[in-house]
Length: 255
Ligand SMILES: Nc1ncnc2c1ncn2[C@@H]1O[C@H](COP(=O)(O)OP(=O)(O)O)[C@@H](O)[C@H]1O
Ligand SMILES: [Mg+2]
Image (cartoon, rainbow, N blue to C red):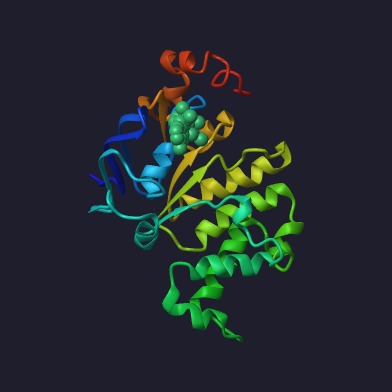
């Protein structure tokens, strides 16, 4: 049997007296898209903070690829292959798309930094990475355009690309389609599904059509706890999930 790449056990997070996570268990299998859904305030983003090391746990244990990373910083976890998508605000607006990705690629390969900056760089791995990521993002045509001049949807894909350029093993995306128009949803959906070919994807997403279409496993959270977990078909039909959303989000989609 395959071992999980990421395993969280009994994760508790308290903000003062408020318990944002009340003992969460999560097992993410390698090479899957594992989505975390639930109503606003359920603790999804807090769980991501715990898994990526953005914030520390109050108690509990997080194991990534066999190593206990509970006490590690976000930077240490990046070294292990955990990446989180950046917000639009952390793109370099005046730099071309390609340079944004190049900088992100340098993030986890500091010893290669000199090679990456020296031109011409020929077929060095850094350029390879940037080209592959550009293709994945469907942004080749705008590779030399400043990030600030991209459409909103293109910027959101570039955010995912910034995480991808670091060549992570597991990539965490927190609502990558938020604020996106329908025209851009298809490209983002293809991008995320494609990532699972050579990464593990952990996804927080409110768009239920996307979640149901591309997830292998869905964990439903409510009030800081896991309500249920299963494949899309099981989650879609579960009365507890419908109740958690007051019936409107899961059933309100096109199918
Ligand atoms: N830094 C913080 N301090 C205090 N409470 C917080 C903090 N961050 C989040 N919370 C609270 O924790 C709960 C879960 O928040 P969050 O993880 O952002 O939920 P979700 O992403 O599912 O919408 C919410 O009630 C939120 O108000
Ligand atoms: Mg959130």
